[in-house]
Amino acid sequence: MFTATLTQIQQATPSVKAFQLKVDDPAFHFLAGQWIDLQIELAGTPHLGGYSMTSSPVVHGEIELAIKSSTRHPVTRWLHEQARVGDTVQISGGQGVFVYQPEMSQRIVLVGAGVGVTPLISIFRYVADAVPDTDATLVYSIPSPDEFLFRDEIERLSQQFDNLHSLVSVTQADAHWQGLSGRTDAALLQRAGMSNDTLYYLCGPQGMVEDVSAMLASLNVPASRIIYEKWW
Image (cartoon, rainbow, N blue to C red; front, top):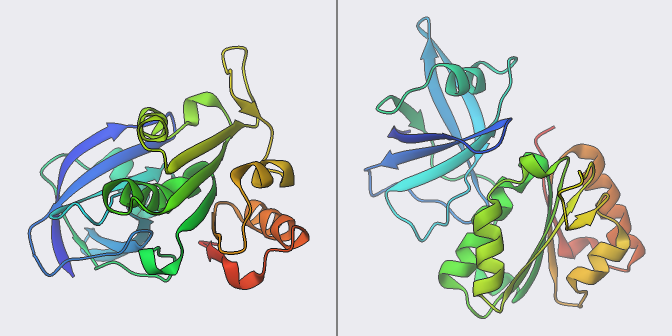
């Protein structure tokens, strides 16, 4: 485990807080899309929570987490209700096989819903930072415009880089939302661009992942081209 210090806490959306953590140990590393275990002590008892990093691995010495509030999970509850800048926690190195590396494909579609977008943002940022030859499209479904995580950055990167694209859809759009509406469907996936060498990354609630997987299968995407992140 590595010691990490909280350096910034921000309310990113009504239900999600973003946490910046400084990690001084040079042995700490991760790949785009991975998660960490974060450990705290409560009343002398250690508690663990697993969280996807939103950071690009190109950035050394610090990581970012974006975590949805929960009263049932003790670590998440502590982070949202008690954590303060300057607090220290213990974290693992990067874990999991939900990763992107350039040799895997030069065409990726990142499909997320809600807070499931977190590992996808790590990959999106990594492509922006270090992989100009990869074409990446983020397909992101959110319940309402105020839950649009990383909105400014996603829009800026999509405009700044020719190889980065985003399709954001709101399931409960209000009168001010001018973008796409509804859930991710086959038409939206086709709009993201289909090719034989595309890798599809899916992360979100169980129903969304299962539905999108079935849609991709109906569009003749082989199972070997679909990578999942599951937390249920």
